[in-house]
Length: 286
Image (tube, rainbow, N blue to C red):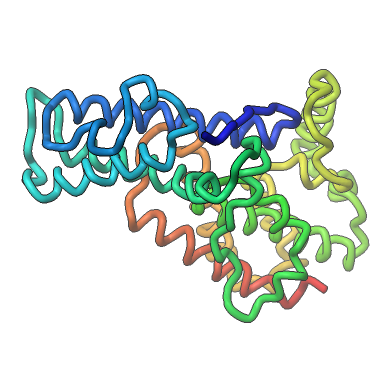
């Protein structure tokens, strides 16, 4: 069996650990619910016991069981099949979403005899987040930090941090060496507040050498629009950059607060917007 240890050495790992645990709990609950409905699949078919269904050491086989359940639902029931308010297709979709999160980890588990969870997460191959023609070595520092198993979060994480590098470069080229030097009071206030909060939590990692790492996506947009004369020859239009950033911000917050599943169109739009944004600003980062 694979011995998985859950470590909480820093905030990035805590977040990844939490997301994986939540996905695993959701997956097993949904699997149990389908098994109780006697749809044809069973623990026995996959050599699992009820106690093993609750044990992440058996994740690879649990995922195979979950896939079997989805296959049986799609083969036997229509999309509107409802059992006293419990729609089969809806719950099969929930299972699919958890598999997307957990399957990269399960594949690594199959090939490892003993490895703790943070190391497993780091070994999961990230999505191809950079567009064709963009040098991965140029953004190696960002790519190396990809410990988020969900590909949608990977696109947002990379885009957000390349956007930060872009803003730093443009500001520096125009004589602004810090966010404070922009004279935007609300941003300065937020940076000070977040720094003070971070000091109270000794376990949090240092965010970065520049104060821009204390700002969120909506605040990055505020910098660009506030100093539009510095960015107007590098970005297509204010509406174009606003649309990209607003989409990232909206979906990022929605998923982080578990306020609903994303549609395939939303997932596709994030990937498209990410690639469009990086292609547009990459030439100005050197």
